[in-house]
Length: 166
Image (spheres, rainbow, N blue to C red):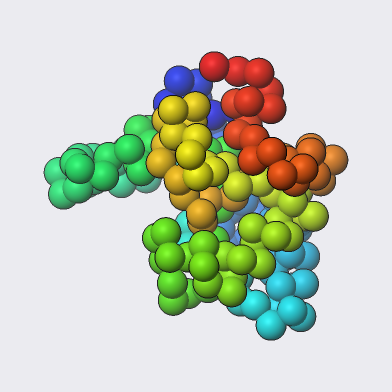
């Protein structure tokens, strides 16, 4: 669990990074299968952002503070980003970004099928008070298939709720 309330150290990173996005090897394999199956369904799924180091996250956060302070809740401070774990990815189709992504073919496919591959939508709509992050229809976190299927019961849980963590 990584969040603004539950931070990790600057030295933390994925134990077995792989591929161009430096995701954890298990995550990368699940993502490869998911993107291949999406492609068979006529849907393009691309990684906009995968692993980010502490220093990369610090640079992103500092830039956002200077240029977009009104949107700072969308940016995790260094040590508070799941991207640093190698377990999360921002996914899209290469064209439609931000909230309209949820209504794209890619967004609809991911929201209907990501749990089949072990991914959950990390920041669901209406859960900002719990997660501390506004709705992000593009941010998916790998938790494994057994756990992710429990998130697909129509209950729109957050990881915090599932784990019973404040």
